[in-house]
Image 1 (cartoon, helix red, strand yellow):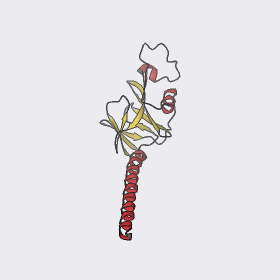
Image 2: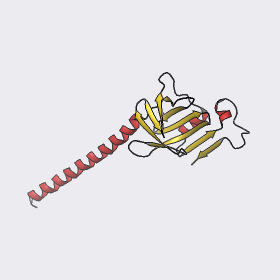
Image 3: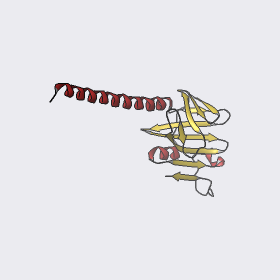
Image 4: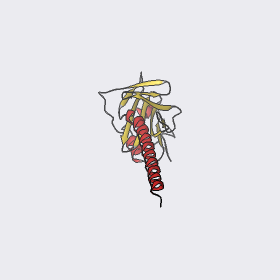
Length: 159
């Protein structure tokens, strides 16, 4: 065997291994960069619009309140810089550690408020697939009231 060819083969193997390590590192850093901006916090979007972002392990969930009611849904990465809230028509984009963009609206974190779980948010965090739970406006303000008898206004979708 020619020692020169063996050296070339070893060199090519080392070069390919280096490329693989660099590629995996780049992909990991891109994923970490996007996830590092998504923070478990309460955000305010003006008026009576509030958003909670909650995390349990690798699972992220959204809980939003507005005069239209409350929605709890799973959050799914959709690229390097944005997420999709299941069943929501616009992307969620972390701007920085204290700001998120949801459609055309900017939400600022409220540092004095802690994320407080509701039964629906806990259910979302415990599930593994796509999750969405909508609650009618008159029920969204009273979290302790039983959800029975809502005539289809309380919808849960789990896939």
